[in-house]
Length: 121
Image (cartoon, rainbow, N blue to C red; front, side, top):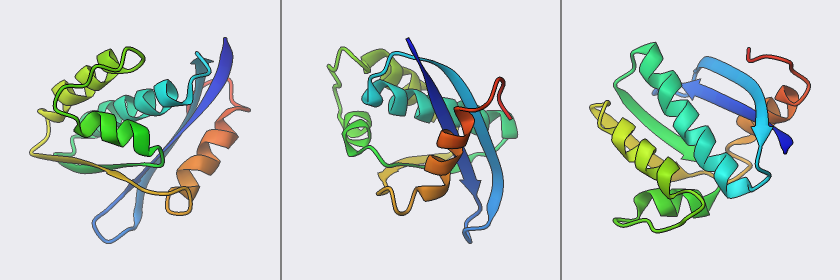
């Protein structure tokens, strides 16, 4: 097992930063599983904040495509995607989109920073 850093950034409709989280946990070292887990974590955070209209942007197109599939059969992330789809129902609007690393730069930097943490901030 390795350590995985997670960076989650929340923005308002006009692009202003609303909140940011950084955390670290044990990793299975599969980037696709880590990205899917980060999306699930973002949904949990959004629900705890009481938000009801959200868009999740991810820099892993494979994961976004798996979430958008009608019948995901990927053994690595099938259960995580099922969790994501169940949590999606908790929001009045919830969408998922691919955003390249350039557009997801702050979240990526938060994830790198998180590798130095002992607990989430």
